[in-house]
Image (cartoon, rainbow, N blue to C red; front, top):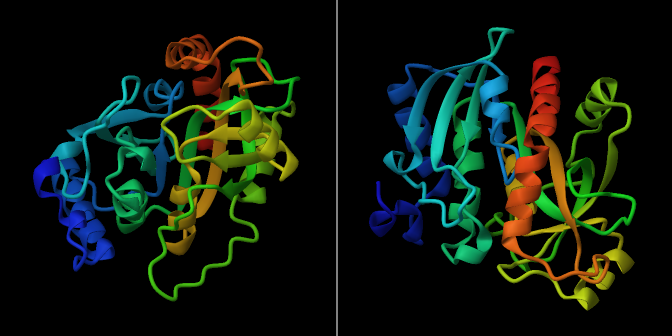
Length: 276
C-alpha cells in the first residue's frame, strides 16, 4: 500500500478496522499469528532489534496497509517479527510516522494500533530527544515517567475518554531499574516540530514540569493506552535542549549521538525486553 492510497486518509474509514487489516497482513507475511510485545525504535535505538532475539521475518512497512514511508534519515521503514529467547514474539516497528509530516494523527498512531491488533500487550516507545537537565550528557538513556502533549491534538476521536494517570508503567520502569539502577527518569514534552524548540520554549517546558523535549511518543502512548496496552518509554538524550546547550542544534548531531550510544543503549533495552 503506497502513500497515494492510504485508507487512513479517508475520514469515513475506521482506523481500528484498518489496524485489524494491517495485523492480518502481518500475520500472513510473517507466519506468526500473534505478537506479545511491540517496540518502536527511534533515533539511536535500532540495533536493539538485532539483540533481543532471532528475526524470523522482515517486511517493508509500505507493503502493509496504512503505513507510510519514513520521511527521515536514521529511521528504517521495516517491520520485523522476532522470536525472543522466552518463546514470546516481538514486533519491531522501524516505520514511525511523525506528526510534523502532516499525514494526520491517525497515521501517526497506526503502528501502535496495528501492534495492539496483532495481540501485543506491551508497547515499548523509544526516541532520541533533547534534555533539559544539565546533568544529562549526550548518550544518556532516560526513562519516561509521564508526558506533556504540546501538539494540540489527540489520537482519540469523538467523546472518547481515557485515563492517563499512570500512562507510563511504573512496573516496567521499576523492572528497568533492576537491570540498570542508575537510570534516571523525566517528563517528556512532545512538540509539533519539525523545527527544534527555541530557548524560550525549552524554558517553558521546564517551567511546566518537563525534562525531555522531542517530536514523537506522546500521541503514540495515548493510542497505546486506548488499545489497552502497558506502555514503557525511553528517551536517548542526544543533545542538551536549546538554550541549555550553548552551541546550535543540528540533526547530524542527533544522528551522531545516537550512533555513539547505540551499542550501550541497545544492549540495555534488550535486557529489559528479556525481563518483561
